Length: 397
Image (cartoon, rainbow, N blue to C red):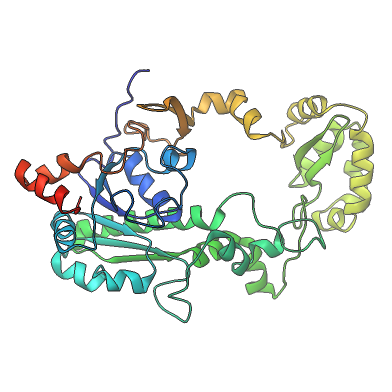
């Protein structure tokens, strides 16, 4: 397999990655995929009782989250290990961590201490509930944030009770918000010359991802209910059964409604005063669903998808993950990125979902073994072979 070339978009930036699990690594992955020098600082194997929280090193999750990085296995509980980290901080642009706030302070990695040492450093902190407040020291996990952030109350069929999203929505969005904040801070630093503290949390990110559902309550005082596979206020928009399965249908406005009526052979519905506004159609949703699914039951999903496309009505298939990666458009976009791994062979990972015309992201190197780059990184800090041997003997690295 030809070796992909690293992006040059963020070349020259040094990022220290002290993250684990998902939210923090998702943030750092943005910088790694766009060419920053990311050093993953982690405990030497066997020292951290929670080192497998993201699964096995060769597992799909670790491979997908930690590619394009260098690994320094460093025992931060030793004075020399802490001193090495501080040397790295002297020349770093970003340090990303997702410790609980009290743990960060106990390690001496609070913003005031780091800023005093390197005034240009940008500290990115991703926590469960925030850096201050009554829940600051609580451990946070994605599903807890989904529940507290309202997501589980609007997901699932009406009356079903709370349902989690099928992905780690709070974790992933917190990581992305952290990356956005870091990029903003980098741009501001170009003007001021000073670093700053970027903070986000799973709880804040999940609330932000609620978006129109949360705004619905803040502006109108309306608590959104579960709507199942239907859109909360548009219809017909949701999952509709066909003869051989189901499709997603999205009819968003009056012209689309009339086009949809023509597509299913009921043009007269488009002029029917009972259905001539979003509000009227929503009020008639159960009746409309029954009539539409009676028509859809006469043909397979492919037939209806083709009919919708001919009439410019938004619609799409509902894929399993295997089918998703076989779709022609997904193949064309190339979001499944190949990479050669020394033990796993040729594998594919999820690429960045944004394309830059001159300096696109890529997956150039697989997730490193723990401590794979110890000698290389420490040599850059001025440690010679004798010093490296002493550090290994003392279990600092």
